[in-house]
Amino acid sequence: YNNITYDILAHTAIIEHRNWAFLTLGFAIIAAGSMWYEKLNITNIAFLIILAFMALITATNGRELVYYHGVGVISLPQAGIEDHEDDD
View 1 (cartoon, rainbow, N blue to C red):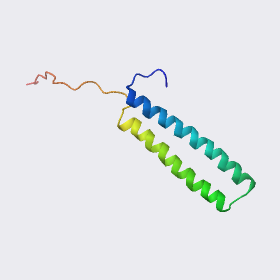
View 2: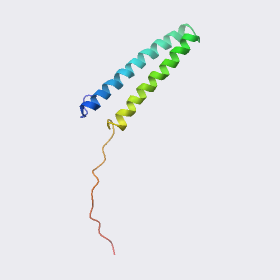
View 3: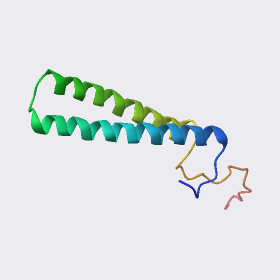
View 4: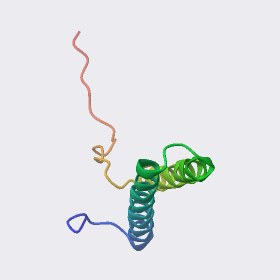
């Protein structure tokens, strides 16, 4: 987290992804606790639906980090014109 060089837009996306991940984890713990005591009812089904949407938002933020900002991706060497000799 603190040892990667990136721009301010990527930093903002990283913070947003981290916050959604922690929020989703906290909600998952609450939903699991609710299901532990009251097996399956309408409240728990609502918790699971909300949790699925929260996980989707977190995953979408992670996708933006990789595909839009290139965070966590090893950069490829620069493509250039190489001098190739023909073996005649």
